[in-house]
Image (cartoon, rainbow, N blue to C red; front, side, top):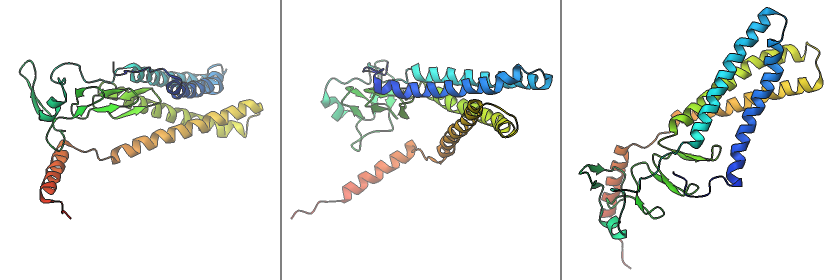
Amino acid sequence: MAFRCDRWTLINVLPVGFVWVILGTIWSLYSLLHLLPQITSEKPDIKQNGIIEAIVCNSLTFMVVTCLVLAMFTDPGSVPDAPPWQAQNEEDDKTSTGKNQTGTGTQVVQHETKLSGARRWCKNCSLYKPDRCHHCRVCKSCILKMDHHCPWIANCIGFNNHKYFLLLVFYALVNLAFISFTLCYETVSLVYVVEMTFWRRFFLVFVTTFSLIMGMLLKCFFSAAPLVDFPRHDDNRILREKTRSLRKRWTPVSL
């Protein structure tokens, strides 16, 4: 398991609980204020429309909850405590290069190395780090293909749960867009036309506004993702070669 510490502390539980409260609040208010009146309506066309919307909304909500649980409880992946990632002492770290032989004779080639060409070494885990592997201070472990530590699921986004995290954001965005679209028409048509109680009008406007805000936040996440230029292995290799050449040319001036 990637976690080498007490995972469910108060500071880790609060963001996760906040996500579940948001999910439960939007689904509950949408079901009680929008779906239930349509399903129990005496008009066949309104009742049929409510059944279709209920099937779509509950299906999307099921996918959101499933991806959330999988992203939360799936081990993101950590460095195996076995050759060729082990080292006997720190001298092995100084002499080891980017190529190493495993116990089965398979050669491990790493693109991400130190400026000296040695393999990257984690002092906290006492293990060599594979490419795109980083040490998480929260999990206190080296995570394979680490993207970031997400406090909203109390887990790192790594090799094993990266797909679940992206699907979680995608299904949440689609679900919020569907809820906002179906609620906007009802909010405009009912709040100012149909007589209703103050609290029903308040919560109807609240869930509509809240869904729009959360949907826009997730939309910003997807809009900004393609703009990020992730470094490639070739770019890292060229950068290291340029850095080495500059360090060779530079000679300190002694006063």
